[in-house]
Length: 209
Ligand SMILES: N[C@@H](CCC(=O)N[C@@H](CS)C(=O)NCC(=O)O)C(=O)O
Image 1 (cartoon, rainbow, N blue to C red):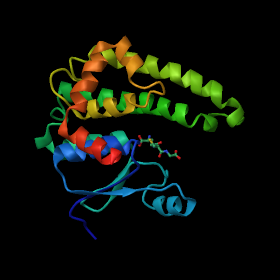
Image 2 (cartoon, helix red, strand yellow):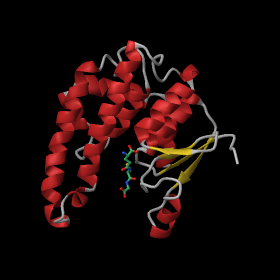
Image 3 (cartoon, rainbow, N blue to C red):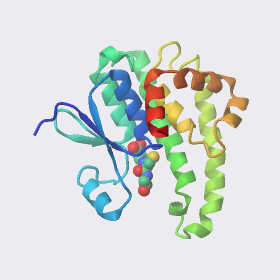
């Protein structure tokens, strides 16, 4: 059956926050389905998203996609009026793809090493602390690559989906945003700009409720 709106599968405080913010920016109608961690629920969810991770997005056309960056890039191109990406094929769009993939493949991946450190060694919990410490250091190093681009947004004067991605994932720094802002005023300004957007405020207010 073809649905008339999007359905976002996610969890508050996860990568689905980025997608929610974009859906709010687009003003697209959507339902939000909170995916629990109970094994039976996850087995059901794997029929939609074989990785069992969030987010996943069921499209109005009737298929479901996963991988946060792919979802964001798709939404940006499918809703050009929301101006969440430059024109596909342009040099600016190439830069947009670069940062979306960089942030997803590196910064998001690094956050997973921080928060699921025990999964990254056969020694499990015994190795977790060292893995977490290394990943926490890597998080800053990875962020440092995107900081010089901020002017004030990732692509310069125009906001794009990459900014929502950066805003949410940078917020997962285990020591919070403050030490990052003290080191990088451009990131502090970026956070301030993003946090003031109605789409971001709505998602964050819903979560706090
Ligand atoms: N590469 C995936 C990563 C998705 C991911 O790992 N999501 C986390 C939440 S931020 C998750 O589902 N964690 C649950 C788990 O791994 O058990 C993406 O970008 O969508």
